[in-house]
Image (tube, rainbow, N blue to C red; front, top):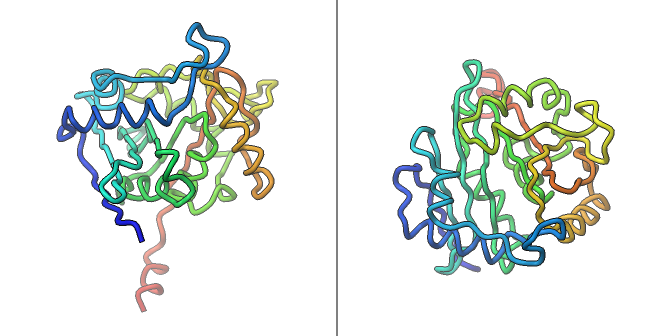
Length: 241
């Protein structure tokens, strides 16, 4: 069995070397630019400096989780936390798993490592449905348990309260928000990454699960927001017996 080593770092403790490795993982595994862009077919890349600026701003509470498998960086996740109406939002700002290590639960493992008992709301925007599946599994048990009513009533204000600019500027889109679209819950980010791989993954998922977020529109990402439900003290006492 492969040896997995998971570590979580607060944003201020993330080193330049961490980000150099994270940037390489992202470039090799995230995706390619879509045909609507001047860089169509080229790999989407981020520099270490850009990653620090976008995902680890000094003005926000951030975290970085990474998992090594047999000494090789196999995946990472970045998170940002902020307060919204007295509640703590934990937003997954990036989730990437090496193609050689997919379908063994590493994405969910990374997200579970980032969870905190004081979190009230979890969120993610992603063009890949597998990232949303992992978030649903980590934060509410399964994609079937996602409450769309919560997304439609809370999404706009939660997004606008974010200290991360690309989250704050994202526009909710989909039939949940009374748009005529193939999407149900998404955001218009103007990020035109190629959708061939995400769409193939989505078709496979639809064959096995009731997928609630709709299809993926060009220049958009899926939007998933989950309200953390606290277990009652009575239930906790019962489980402790």
